[in-house]
Length: 337
Image (tube, rainbow, N blue to C red):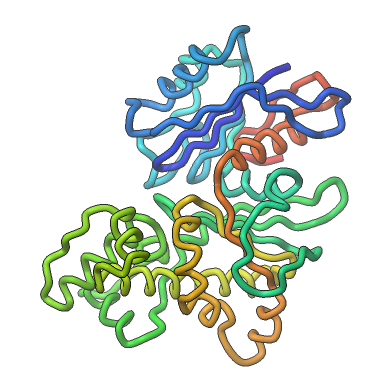
């Protein structure tokens, strides 16, 4: 039975028509796949309907939705989505019998059982795949993270909201940055530094600290200028971004003992891999003292987000929403097995 699998982030909506591979071996087959810009649609229902109109020839009644944030009852809660998502109206608008929901980085972690496992450019640590907890981390419109724990039957995945953890400065310049971002003190999450909007905020704040006028208005322009070394503040903003990403990644690697490695996902990072390699990312990732011995053995790769989210969402759905091959049963909304 074909079903829809959608990976919805703050910027892109990736949608596929999927089905279990013939023979019931647990694999998935992609029948159609498209990428949409979320801002071009007034609602998620209309984005999904555009895909159905273009690619679906027979009625589809089941959908698995991987999206930024978490499902709370009938609503997906997140600050970075283009529109609010209410599951009941969405199901009615598309004529679906069922919508199952999981976090977008939870879906990426499930893709480690298939398409994501051998995809990536080596960044630091041993260039070898080992068994153990594996992290998937990605700065985009927000900052997502999930961990895959190996075990029988493919193991399991823990979704997180780690991007909301407090940012901690590592240098005098970062302390000045934090004081400017929060002049009255208070909570500043890592996501406000380590994301596309965060990079723009860092760049603008650095300009304000030094009394210069920002000339770049979007994150892509900042990374382009940093690669070309044509704007000193862009270069500094990307360096701070890379350092903060290193600290964040090392924190999570220690928390979950991620001996299976780390995948940094997203086209955003793929465009600055060489800057990441030359940056303080690795030094900040390694931290210090006893933690360094552990973290030096953790491999880190950079991979494209691409189709892996819909692949992982489909893997999750076939595992938790199928009682037997070809017999879809209602899966729990909110990504709970």
